[in-house]
Amino acid sequence: MTDPLGLIPGPGPVSRATGHSQAPSTPNGGPEFKDVLLDNLRRVNELQQDATKAIEDLQAGRRTDYEGVLVATQKADVAFKMLQALRNKVMEAYDEVKQMRV
Image (cartoon, rainbow, N blue to C red):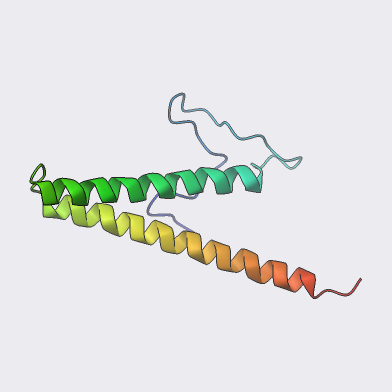
C-alpha cells in the first residue's frame, strides 16, 4: 500500500531532526502501535495547522498562491479522513473483541 502523504512510516517513525528511527520496537522488531499512532496524530495536527495558516495568510494578503493553499487544505483533509478511517477500524475491532465469548 502506498502512502501519498507520507503518514505511514516504513520500518519505524523517523526523527525529523536526526533522520534515525526513534520509536521503541516490539519483540518482533516493529514499532509500537501507540507510538506510530501518536506520531501520525502529531503529523495530522501539523498539516491542519499549516492549512489554517495558509488560509489566514491568503485572507490577509500575505500570500497569493491559491494552488499552494489548495494543496495544503487538501493534504490536511485527506490526512484527517485517513485518521478517521483508522479510528473507525479500531472501533470495529474493539467491538468485535467485546462480543467474543471467553
